[in-house]
Image 1: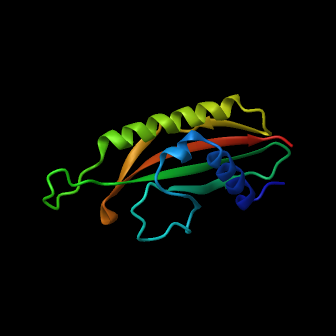
Image 2: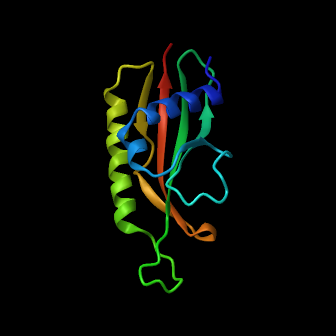
Length: 136
């Protein structure tokens, strides 16, 4: 039977083998471990839910943080739209590669990859919500 940490570890391992993790400037963390003062493009893996049945199903969310920019150096922070767009695209390619991999996991997107604002830290984050089915 899977545990939340096992699912996170497996997702983190798949990320570490990907071009996506090579492209971002930060590291891969499980929820709660990202440094509070990080100004890097970190990926945070969040276990959302799982069912302990013969065929296990669940969901995970990836938040990929992108620091905001001040294009006019006037203290007004805005989304780094170009960088966010590039990361959304690479995240989509990564999800598509998961579907082609031969593992015990089957992955599908739960929602369209999107970007949210984190105003307090002057960041935006790309949200990737995946559902998984695991057959041992």
